[in-house]
Image 1: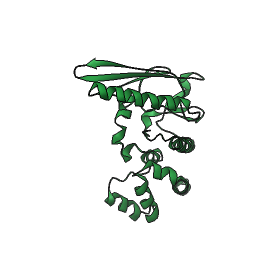
Image 2: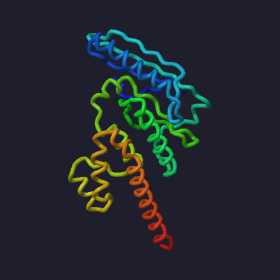
Image 3: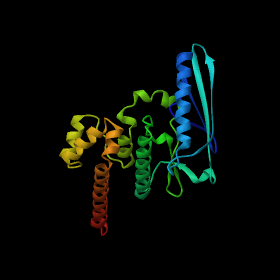
Image 4: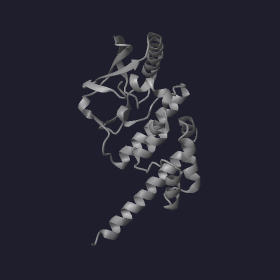
Length: 229
């Protein structure tokens, strides 16, 4: 099973999902095809619009292998797209706000199985983020969705904010004054549901802005204090 898309050429990607039996495979094909059709119908600048989509099944021992190929519409050379690695802060801001706007649109369309991870995200040289649809393998496991592939964890990772794994780590962040207590509670609640995050996005945006502003002050204070040394 492929948890992400494998790039075949400039604008073509492939992925596979392994299904236990024929009935489940047929159900999967129907639901995933519907998901892709909905994806193709969305007009949003943060989406990579698909030009072609094919999916087929094949028997492999006792399992059914669903192989999918997508080809997106490339408005310019693919070299102008890059996987996100080391980004400047302004690029992260573009990506964050575009992704949040896309998440709100998907929520409006009742699409709740989008897994927010960097494997589906491309950054154009113009600083526009472009999301691929969830791959068949990842989509097949989307019912096992956890906070590790939620939009909240994506936002934390995007801004290099420590990702607490338990109550002790949350308490440590509060002790270090990284998060006020009420913000820590908000993030912990939001980690349980993307819907909660989107519904409270205005508050979360203020938090991110504060963290970024705080980081900017700290970074420039250090630079200023060290400039004559």
